[in-house]
Length: 198
Ligand SMILES: C[S@@+](CC[C@H](N)C(=O)[O-])C[C@H]1O[C@@H](n2cnc3c(N)ncnc32)[C@H](O)[C@@H]1O
Image (cartoon, rainbow, N blue to C red):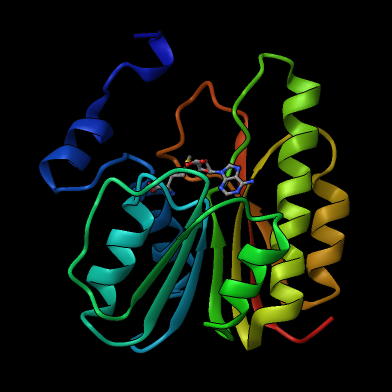
């Protein structure tokens, strides 16, 4: 196991609370700051595996609202929730997009999707930026007026351009790095509130 993967306080806490990944605390921190999740919302979770963000959302929705999720990998949780749809595949694929379009529109589009890291930071940040662009395209097609956007980004120079795109479409858009991100990580989250349209 590498140093990066060594279980820390948050990993152990996640396990004890039934979540398959520590990343759930980043979403909780984002929601604590921006108050994004309300009862009855329809949510799209992009890059959902192993499933912590999805599980937290389903627990929060308490059977109301709806959650659609997509990932290249299967989820490591089997929620007995009727208001849940999961599709395995590539977020860039037209078929996957069509499947998710069929469940939309959404009040919240969130993405924790990240490319498999290569060790080449320039390459990794370019791939991460391409994912955020694709998630922003999903928002332009499937986000309801007033909706919210959350997307993980590997910081590498492209964040200004992406934020400009979000600011042209949302009442407010900004970067936010949760305290629960590992200190050595170069990820941040772009948050858009109050979608106004493309
Ligand atoms: C950090 S993990 C997400 C963790 C998740 N939020 C959770 O709480 O369990 C990033 C995920 O992005 C997914 N991913 C990366 N590129 C993708 C793509 N092109 N299409 C779909 N999923 C992708 C990976 O398979 C991986 O499961």
